[in-house]
Amino acid sequence: MINRIELSKVFDSTNVLVSLSAGHGGVFSERYWTAPNKMKRFYNEAGQTEFTFYEGVFNRQIVLRIISYLHNWGISYSFTNFTHNDIHPRKRGKQTDIDLANSGLPYGFGIEIHANYFSKESVRGFEIYTSKGITKSDRIASTIYEQVKSDNLMPMRSGYSKVDPDVDKEENFAYLIGGIQPLVLVEVDFFSNEDVAKSLMDPIRQDKIAHSISKAIKKSIENEEYI
Image (tube, rainbow, N blue to C red; front, side, top):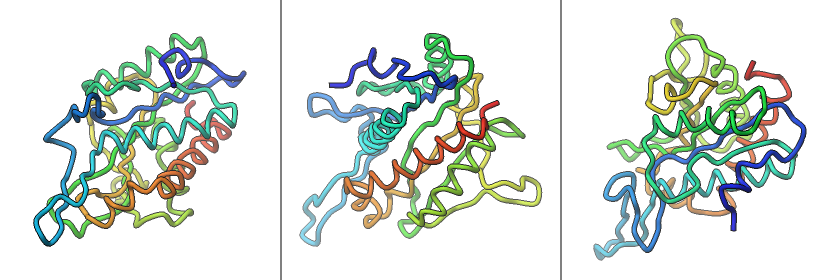
């Protein structure tokens, strides 16, 4: 079992810590801790529940798969909210700074994983967010976006505009302004779409998504985009 000490341990001599966070709560004792929010039940023609998508569970599954890649590649990491608890997003952002201070490493950046939702079920695609303005997070977000796009995993929803000519979307979400270091929030497609939700529960697809994000993290470190 992975515990807090193991997840916060520095595994190699790199000088950057990647703090990973999973949006919302998980499942414990058969209870989804963010219910009835951040979940969706899908029904068959007889009106019976076919399956239920729990966003907080999916987010944790992706983070754990990313951790597996980073660990194998010798990249230092922490998992800021590895329990089932639904910690406030601002606290999750702040925890990235605490994890960095505890690691003794000079640099760090944080990535939080989510799946998206919209009332119109036909909407799909990958989005990535940073806080408003020109920040160190922008380069990291662009690298992740371009890697997922290159791997052709899903439709891409860019935040590009004449005013803000990069691919990330900008919002001062609580997580993104909760910490001092560069923070990025990833929205992995829309679980409001039944086909998407079903595919996101597939372990093989989860691994492809995690591998793509992990490759981008590795590139960001190699290019020192966190400085």
